[in-house]
Length: 253
Image (tube, rainbow, N blue to C red; front, side):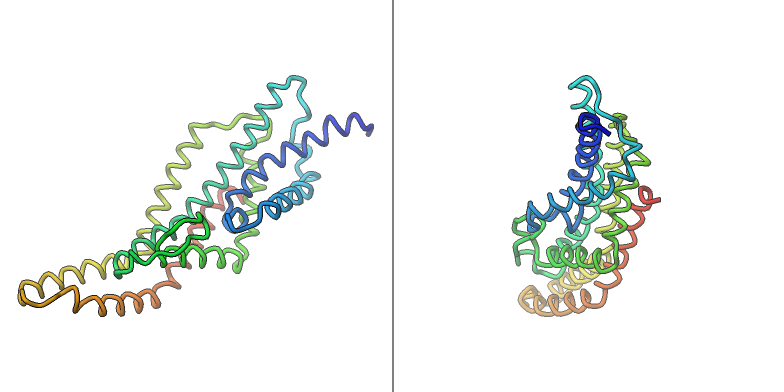
């Protein structure tokens, strides 16, 4: 292969693969967190692209003659990468939503801490569940499944073809709905606990109007809430991992 052929074909194919891989890596849980160095994410995306180039080279089109066509190809690959990364990120955000519901039900909604995924203030339980989910993704080798699913997107979205934006929008809407449902399922015991607690507090307030119900019940609410969290957290995280794996199965094959 001459130098001209290498520059016009192999380098463009490398750039096209990197456009999808790099966009996805910026959003994938664990790899795309804000506390991960930008240089580390860039180096990992470049290394992964270099590894995948021999495997995907025959699927990737060569350099087109028109600059506008080249720009559309790169933009399409970036869109697909963001689409895949957003699916993974939406499922991860279910743990944050579940943590906020849990914090509200056990009475620590105003106890805030820095959220490492968004660099903003968030509920303590939500940040804890997000960090736990990221750790479990790596501990259970779901990070490998995520990367395998990322490579599997080349079987769903062929390079050189513009993605179907309507189907992608419908998919994002379904995943967002699944994420909200997952958050409710993970926090379901606390929703029941909150309803029972509020009903009990109302009955006590009616029976003993002079009793400071909130002052008396607050320690019990915290104690039972943290005990319930200690009992149910493992089942909730196992269910999260199952849902996360199921959403990746469509791409990983």
